Image (tube, rainbow, N blue to C red):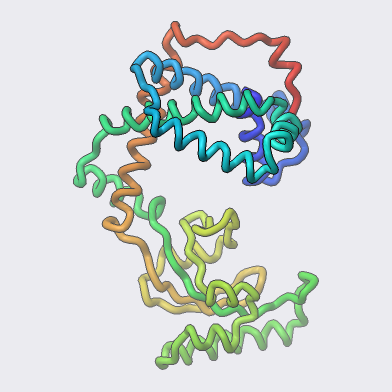
Length: 298
C-alpha cells in the first residue's frame, strides 16, 4: 500500500500540479482522496496476485533472471543498495527488501494479466465500429504553426499597433503559403515560438490538446480548429499568445490505430468486467485496519 500510495501521489502531483494535500475536496481533503484511490488500487493488485497464485502463474528461471537483472540495474541507477534503501525509506517508507518483493510480485501479476488479455478478443469489424463512433476521442492530429506574438517576454500584451502588425504578418504569410511557398521554410524565417528549434513548428495532439510527446497541453484554440479541418487546410487562429498560421498536416487513420485500440479495449474490458467482478467477491473482501491506515501520512 505504501508503494502504491507513493506512486499515486506522484501521479497526482505531476499530472495536476497538486502540492497541498490538505486542501478541501468534497467532504474531505485531496490527501484523503489520494489515499482512498491508492487503497483501491492496492486491493485490486492484491486480488490479481492471489488470482495469479490460484491460476498457478509462476516465473520461469529465465524470467526470474531477467527480473533480477532489471532490478539490479535500477538499484545501481539509484547509487547502490545502501542509497536505494535510504531513498525508498524516504519516499515510500519501505525497505529495499519490501520493494524487491513488490517488484517481483508485480511481474507475476503482469504475467497473469497478459494471460487473461489473451482471452479477450475483438474483431476488426468491432474495432472499426468503435473507432468510427468516437474518432475524435481516438485520433491524433499534427499541426504546423507559425507564431506571431502579441505579448512580450513578461507576458504582457503588446501595444495595439504591434498586435495589428502581428495580425497583418500572419495573414501575409498565410497568403504566401496558399500561393505555394513551403511552410517549413517560413517557420524557420518567421515563427516567434522558441520550440520551433526542436519541433519545426509541428505539434501532435489529441482532441483535448494533450501533446503526444509530453504531459503539456495546448491552448484550446488548437484542437478546436484542427479537429474540424481537413488535412492540408491552412488558416490563421488567435490565442492568448498571438496569431498562429496553422496547417493540418496529418490525422491518424483506423489502420494506424487499430492495434492500439485493440489493446486499449482489451484492458478496459479486463479492468471493468474481470477485475472489478473479482474485487467484489466476498472471499476477496478488503478488511482495513483503520488505526494503521490513519497512521500513514502523505
